[in-house]
Image (cartoon, rainbow, N blue to C red):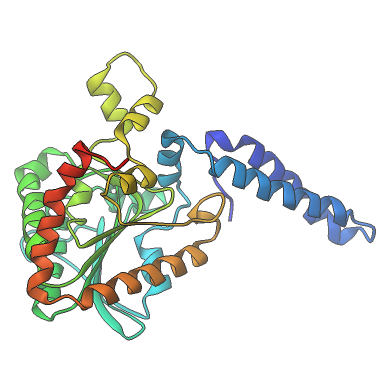
Length: 322
């Protein structure tokens, strides 16, 4: 697979290119410089570690949007032993930016709903670049109601720049669909675990994230607005999105300190796309662990505790922990 490199990865790209060229040449040369290959491999690991341990919030935003980053369907394929996708909202149509269905992870049956951005130009267009329309949120709500009816826990995988703001979406009730999802998720009497796997943008993300536990991948971001939109609204002076990303406190570390995120799931140096299988195992273990703990709670208590959790978020933001 050809990797895409981000602007701050120029040294990593150069080392990886040299390593690739040397490894290609090695089989044809009996005296191939094995020590040089090992040296480059070690240098690459150092560079990945050094760069990714010191990312700025804006750089983390770019990693969260990385075109090679695992998406919802990748996680479903890796962590679910069974998955039956369901389509349509039974009202208007089928929104391919929302993927959801009945699943099983080991002995645990559950309902999985995620946002899918797509990879190729054709798929991105079909999935509207991961920006759901009202019928997508209503499809998700349909699945949430099925989960509650049959007492199955819910896993949501968040990865969206935000809900689609087009005229047609607004005409079909985009704001109402988002608000309805949040309202009904807060009242569901089944466990809900959310994992922000990439970009969690505004109400478009929150409509799938009003759950009991919010887990974030190490380099995921979650914010009320994108850094670019924040710059356009607040400063209007060509200010770099770096400043906005820092002010928004959108990284996993920021959100854990503010009491919004419950756990940060580690990624390998270089991001989740460097080892998707290992990252999927991390997600699987965390999801099952949190679902196991939530299953101990009475169904009636879940909704009450979830509502209390969201009521406390504002207090935490006003008086953040020291």
